[in-house]
Image 1 (cartoon, rainbow, N blue to C red):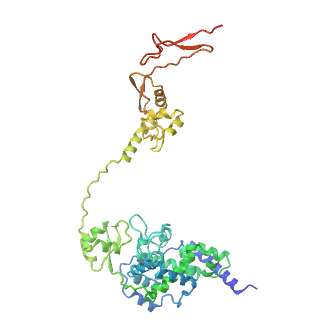
Image 2 (image 1 turned 90 degrees about the vertical axis):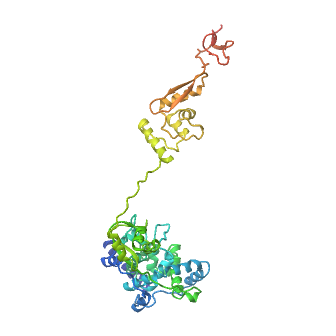
Image 3 (image 1 turned 45 degrees about the vertical axis):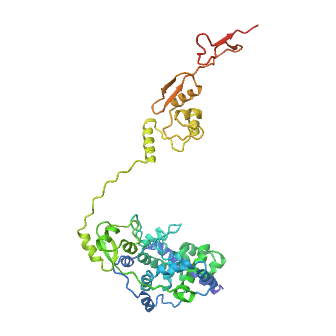
Length: 462
């Protein structure tokens, strides 16, 4: 007869499998219309959100987290010692975001302790970006953010918006809890992925997160992720008991304006009489400081109507024409493009004379001379590769003929080559002949092989 633990594990694994299939069929964690409407709502989150969440009884299940585990104690000590500065700054930074986030959690029936998850993820920094590409306070990767209706493009990245990303995170956490039925497992899946946790539950004999952690089934980051979050909950709910100063939770107060035309934050600030820093703080999702058309721009309270009136008659000034100055790189590219039309091939800047010589089966010195490079060992060839006729003509330069330099041009597309005339002292002989130089044939500047000099062929004796 199977024991109760194995039956519970089998039931949970079946529940997880059914939940995974249902979510995949329904569109991979999509956000419903109510969620998107709440994310784009023009009303600001009211003050007193923490008290509202307490009245609603966020979570509805009492205390969903065990804060007294030994691993939690170690992280509490770390936050009080070498990680104290990080925790202190994060508490102060999140003071303006926590009320709005708690109110959103309360409306969705989630535990209010989850409001401290961004403290561990990003320190409540909207501009935080991880090496894996996760961004914003809740550290969404692009794929998951788009699943939950977040806009991510060249101008807008709503993962950086504390309010819109909180709506998406709430739906994601609800889906994870529906899948695993346990908040600690849900947090582990939030960090390492739901497929990993579901696979461990299906293949291993484990009951909860702590069992997975002790047996080493989770990555090292995830093993410390949940205890670190629980330690942050312990300190943040009673900071003065752990030597921290309690922050003043003052929520953000703003109004929204539907912008019909693209406008920069500096221009909007001038039109409504607010500062650029205020608008940038209220709209962290605008990546380039430009509000696209149709965007719900947040402005300080009382500045919405002046901005609407000013935008109705605003005409964008003509932008001056910017003429790009040709740089060295652009000139090189233009020269290479011109060479392509002549020779049909472009030589890379990193291509050396050695490689060109191997490709054309000529000497490196001839290629170096043909391309007017100064150093034959490490010459960089910026022009088109000399055609074979040009390279062979460059090879003739090695003969070093004395006399007046003679200028020859190679084939079309090859550089001009300067060839020096020199006396050629070689002569083809027959087998058995001996070669003897006549007197005065090697005089400086003389013309060997001409009149009065040259070589004498001696007939074979005997």
